[in-house]
Image (cartoon, rainbow, N blue to C red; front, side):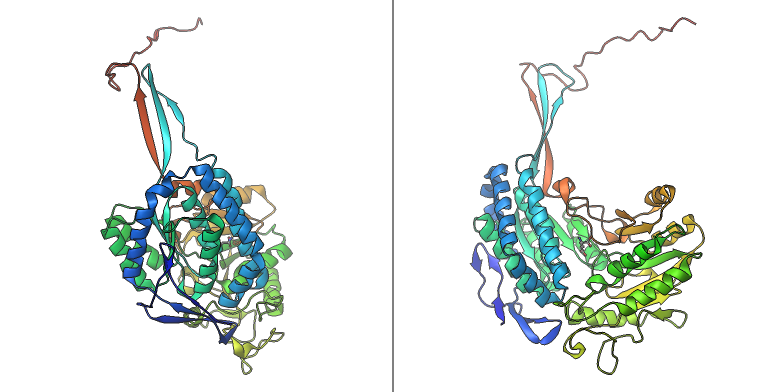
Length: 519
Ligand code: UN1
């Protein structure tokens, strides 16, 4: 059953489709339409920003504990709708149902964390250098926040922005990935209904990338946008960073990754193989935290490669409602881009993990495929052994079921290789040596480090974010994201009844600098 989905501004569905109509299809069965999407344009985004600006003062006046209660109710409503929302996510972007349920869980976890933050949002009382004067700090909302998100986590990652932004007293325009519009609209409805949010506090704009960019520009020029949050590619992140910088803003950027996994000689190889399979091929390799390159010590390389090859060959691929390691690509655009990444495979790469490459079809079959491969956008997994440091496959993010493999001789070399592509999101090391783990942690440029765990699967209350090409140092989740959605305000209050000048009218105790202890 297909539905039609629209943008919502100031509590009202937007009429018409100035950006045209888009068909959101099930990538596991491309003949099935999930939603007809009425796209807005730059003007739609700018109108939403104006509505958010108007709604902001009274939302900021709602006491933070009351906003926290709204987050609590949202969490409960999401929990009560968990299976429905997860089914929709699986239908719309092809993520295996178990993962989709986990994704919905991540929203609830985020609500669980921030419902209490409404009763904290702590500021500090600070002593003054002068008598009869007191210093304080307060967290103020930033104002109007524009959130632009990707479709690989169509509901969890948006909640990392929307929940804390609302809790902190901001109003929001959310622009989800247009190919995941039905999932986005479902989350949007849950947030609005669950939170009892007044009109204009949270607005939804469905639009393509270029119109969104023009909309961000217009809203910034209008003075109706105070902060941008963006999850997506490093290239678009850089454009958003430039745009925000021209308006003296610093966006919250969560970008791509080329996440390394180092396998040391002491590693538990079985464990490392299962982690490489999950983080390289789970979600069809379409997480920003997906494994990019395995960097394996040459003493254990043969054993590890053999076992990972076997694990990938035996991994069930297919219908995302069945028990599979991965399903289809998110949508046609991602399938096309993946085909481009496959052209980066070169004769010096040893291709493992499958007998075929490219689209899985009756003519290019995968043994054990679950369901009808011809119905959807299913691709053979690729494990490419023998990648070189200057290969595109080693240096660039490849969103899809492809993992490179190279070897190293000592840990310094492994760390150098792990940092070489210049991203810095997630990373992992498998070792039984504590010293290896700490040396790796210190040397790796990534914002997130796993020890004996995969590169993906971060918990929802630790700082999430990257360095280098993976972001601008912003962090999401937990207490750390509060610095994205609030601004520190300092206050000093002098009740001495005189003008006490800082740094000048201060008293000093006199030290006896010549004092020495007896010999
Ligand atoms: C993403 O791919 O944008 O750590 C986020 C993980 C998930 C989030 C991934 N919890 O893999």
